[in-house]
Amino acid sequence: MKRLAFAVISAGLLSACASDGTARQRALEEAMRSAERAAMAALPETALQAQTLRPGECGLFLWSQTDTSKFIFFSKAISETAMLTQGELPVTLTQVSAGGDLFGEFNTRTSYRSEAGSEVDLVLSPGEILEGGQRVKDGLITVTNEAGWLTKLPVLGVRACQPK
Image (cartoon, rainbow, N blue to C red; front, side, top):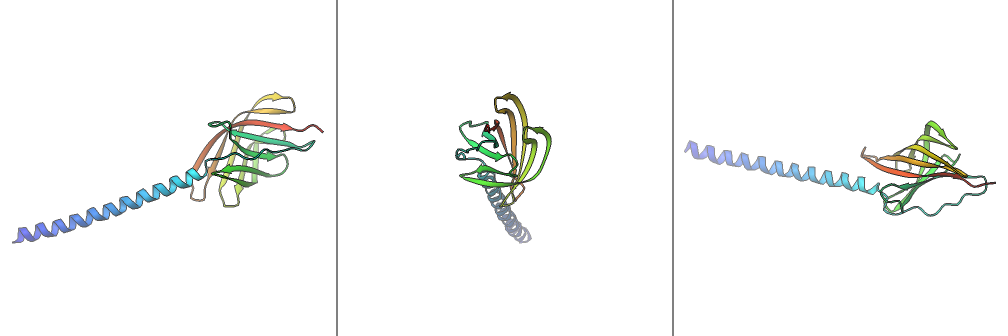
């Protein structure tokens, strides 16, 4: 009789542990799916619209290295703002710091913040000089969302000035 009672109690405890483990596993899987959705939302699905510079203005134009048809980042010199496409929407960024080397009218390291609170860090490697500008040999945009997840976007592009 004691053995039967022990077996019934053990089976009950074991099933309770298993169902608790299953609930924990489901919660973990849902948290991972949620984090993946947040990270995927930072990836550009569309491109920014064409940008126009007036005479004497300079701009930084960056395209995705993984899909060079996607124009994903733009900033006018001295504006302290930028546009970045995230998901399907362009996001306005406000510059919070700039450093590194001088790259024409821009810096090789710049940090921005979005209205939603994401942090965006831009690191550029200057390339060859062009007439009216300079190539961006390569660069990296790192987006840190509000939950702390990082999305890294390799970029290439050009800084260019419209003649006066």
